[in-house]
Image 1 (cartoon, rainbow, N blue to C red):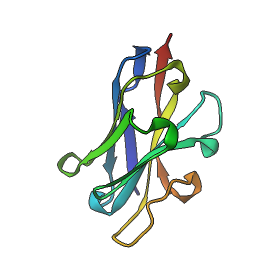
Image 2 (cartoon, rainbow, N blue to C red; image 1 turned 180 degrees about the vertical axis):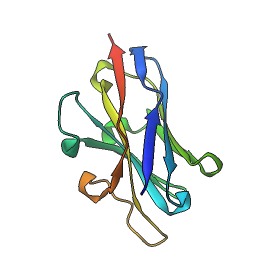
Image 3 (tube, rainbow, N blue to C red; image 1 turned 60 degrees about the vertical axis):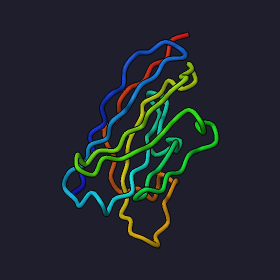
Image 4 (cartoon, rainbow, N blue to C red; image 1 turned 90 degrees about the vertical axis):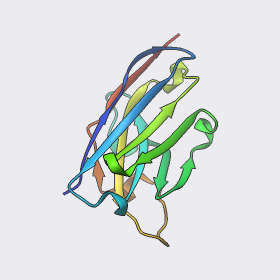
Length: 128
């Protein structure tokens, strides 16, 4: 079973930056696509909004985060990162990482229903 643990959330002022981490275990890391999602506190995870995904070295971003967020991976550490810059109060949310099986030729999904494994989330709060 794939296990995912997010870290790096916290309180930051508008205009600041955070780097979120998602560490995976229980499965071959190279065979996983990793996506980042966010959802308002108290809302169902199933309705989370997709932010970004990485499949091998291919990266994809939602339009609202383009140019501000950067996804990357360190295979030696079984970890995917989300660097978030120029944060605004609208970025306040619980951030989740999620995984689905991937190999070359597979689609890199952005729909929450396609992701089989989820972390518990990490809270990001951006003050004005």
